[in-house]
Image (cartoon, rainbow, N blue to C red; front, side, top):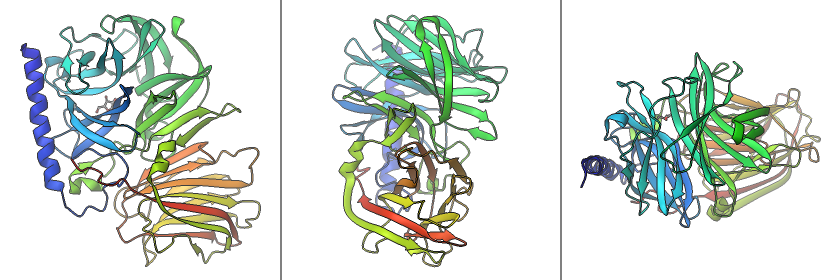
Length: 500
Ligand code: FRU
């Protein structure tokens, strides 16, 4: 066996043992925060989703992983497989740092199928070397065990237009060629550069595809370029955008790969919440474009670390373009497989005293709830929905909609442990259903995802309430009435999740 392979196999074996031992320790513990249907690692730290691919009849999810602790450290690639994007089976760690060029970690990247093999393209990170970030390839015959290419790094230095911050290659095939976008920056301006190859090993530099106009952040992490019909979409995770530290956006426009040009037509937040980052897309077996993001954020306080794990993935979401040129972000249809017992309410009216929306028969910890509010009939200036409310009224996550400025706000100031910052967005309405505010809410043990007006905007946050805080109420803030058109709720849970 050559040394390169032996070193990597050993590093992977040690990491697998560590994560197995850590997961075994967590078995049977009472953990109020472990998600019941969102993806988490068996134990310890995870961040970005990597290498999302539909390969030989199954979905593969790799992820940034530190198998040795609940904190970020030298990055490995964790690995899981699923037939339906919902039920994931944990697989052995795919990549571990083992070579001088990735001694500081195997950073984010993507996966492709080539010559019958599953190939991973990732960033080798070595902070004590120069350049510190280079692009590398690893391949597998069986989809489980990966060998690093002897020719690594396949891109050994950033282009002159970039800098040492040069990472997160996303590779895809177009015609007979492979393209790669990589995130970088120069003098505090985030940008995406483009490369082309015929064999994944030799790459020619095509130029800067797009860069910030000064308002979109200092470094562009995790770029992903794809097309929905004629429309090109560039998903990015900018750092230092406006007053936000990190956020996840999508820029829409026209892209010509031949001359590395991208003409921007508009942009939006891929998610308006506090905990969504580093999203990556894949093409499903049936052609759908699916996006998965890291449901957490750099600098978050991470109360779940006490229970031996940190970070999870947001729900897989399908991306489509609506006829009016608006991007629709919708929970994948497969999620309906999880629907258990249900409850329903319709045509109810409430005032500031509030109306209970939770049926006591069902636990409201893990649920899908589809709420329609009739704004035309609602006389209150502002309405509120309390979620995961404690019986004594001390704890609740508050969603408010203000009719006068059209903003929906998610207030975590009384959500329990963890961060207390709020987020908000201007609600986009469907022209035909202008008077209806539709909120499609997914609650798990420590998260809330809200799909607004049929996926015209999404807001995702982590929340850490007490296990007993399960109430839900609808009320008018101050004066007037609020009219609930309908509510459908389903209990959601993946049986046997995280059983190794
Ligand atoms: C994004 C990111 C990537 C990097 C990885 C390291 O969250 O900072 O740019 O590859 O995380 O874990």
